[in-house]
Image 1 (cartoon, rainbow, N blue to C red):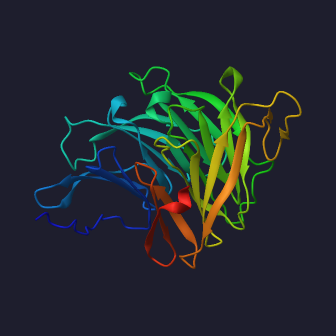
Image 2: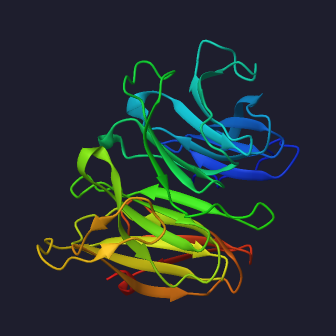
Image 3: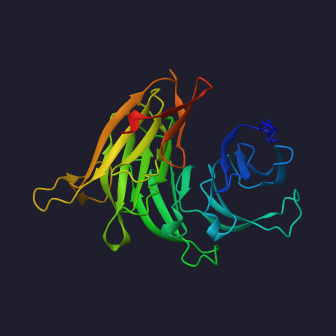
Length: 320
């Protein structure tokens, strides 16, 4: 009988902001207000996590990590309140625990405020990275030459908010891409209590396709479900107002005349009647702030975690 996974001590000295698994679930990375990243490898023989390496990665709190698809190598990206994105690559020639096993390949410093979220695009779109911070600007970068990850090109810069939030106010930002390789390229960006769906348009620019309605607090997390043969797509959000919301997105042939002009909160406009968003359901089971939502790999189970210190899962008819 297989042993249950055991709890382990990370060794971080301050609050842990993020935990991310690699593609295979055999390695996880953690980041903290102590400015360090720690990476652990899973030992199946003992069901324990063994320290791969630990290093000081930024000059302020490290708040988010993301692994690239393994086809691009063993690549990890990090962001921080120090306004930088850093790209790291594992070097197996270095000794484990030496503080030198993860080499910094690039530092990107375009943001004018602390960064809150980043995400790699699905691998079929190439090695592409998006990030957003308190300046309210979504920035998208491409590694034009995946063999040289020291060079990243800023390909899109979108002002999601008309004006950045005041620094004294609590803020949150989140983003994720549509994982579908059979539909148009979409990504959803959440800024404060607003959610915006962007679509890849002409000249490789992203334009606003729709908005996520009915949030009454900061959106803490957003997750786009794998479609797995569905004729529609599902997006889930977790909100400070205590609700997990599930949205259904449908696309239909564009109408040639009388298309609506969508203009809220962006500096790019798109005439669009082919993207329709519908609030499918709303759930307040946590009875407290919702901090994280995540779909499983088939898009059939949605998990959420909240201020009640519980993980809850939903499946079934509510996704139809």
